[in-house]
Length: 556
Image (cartoon, rainbow, N blue to C red; front, side, top):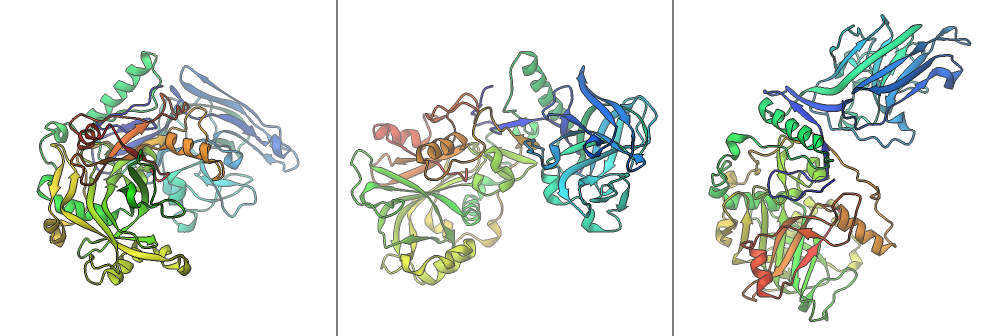
């Protein structure tokens, strides 16, 4: 399996299955295709409660075959149950499900080989009013005798059902509290097919499971092309952990056009991105840097750059940029680097960037806004800052980061302001190369121009994060510093790359997609990234003996 880095519309670290049709609310998200299953399935029957029911499961020719007998539980004198399930309902669940929170129904392509009236479906691991039962269950299904799609609206499912019969006790239409909640739809955690409450033979065959009525803007032809590419790659023996999802052909046809007015509204995009993001990478020279537990003044000359991830905030009215730092610092050659990829949490797992899951790009894509603001940082008690620095800065910082207001008073936290150089703004938010923004244009930007940078022609995100093969699933403890550092480097999908300015009068930062191994299960500890020769960072590197600083954070 090859981990792909590209400045095209690529979503890193994903295992994706996707289908769609044209129109709002007509998208379809594949949950399981038994021709290429991504989940582990097994049976569980009522013998766990003293019953006599039996069942078995086999995947044969890309079809799940679930057969068995639902028998009478002797001490209940009532039929028990058989289930085919994945996710184990809280019993060491490791299954991963796609986010279907924008969808309206579950669709299963299946058939029954025998007449049986006790088929049911459930999903989720949330406990309701039952003593033992978990998840949301739908009423008994009518399953066709030939393969066909059975569609179950999510509002047909309920968290309150009879544990003996499977019958719904309180419907979603009668009580909203038993309807599937957003958390479960974002990650079902478990899914099961039941033969329950009706004595008799069970013989169910299933081809696929998906969610439909999803709020994505897909075109059938584009998505069929994507599926064709995936099938072709599989036919050639390639395992895919990254699927390139094609953007809309019309929007992507001319990379030099401006589909979202980016070139005409650089200042507005910069103001929105800097205000909406909550953290960035601060790069400075070694003469007066911030270190983790103190403030170092004597770094080795062989390490002229220092970079650290820091929270910051901007004043909404003026765009002024503030930090809350321990102690008083004058940092004359500093750069704050911010990526739009740090804004939308729905895309964090993929290193994605965009205001919507229906049009996203990789963090390195030119359409993902990335901004470097260079200048000098001074404490608010210095004469170099603008008026009302402390009061304006505190208000902005405490709104963006409410916890800051409760930081220890005896730790000497002081508001600092970044005073940009007049030519200190560099931004890339579209095809055609980076753009300069003057300080005056940035600070005087009209309010109407400060609006979200919606990316057009991006990819539709209907994907599940790929957990990797052998990669640790949780971060090592803080005291295991080497292991923790390797974990962060390996799992980061993008980084800030810091350089000295080519003219030697400051610093610069840019955003790069990154990997340290051919697969997500193989970490080399050696970060690799793509950097074109014409990129400002590449030009700066050549001017300073290839000196760079890469800054990693678990936030990316």
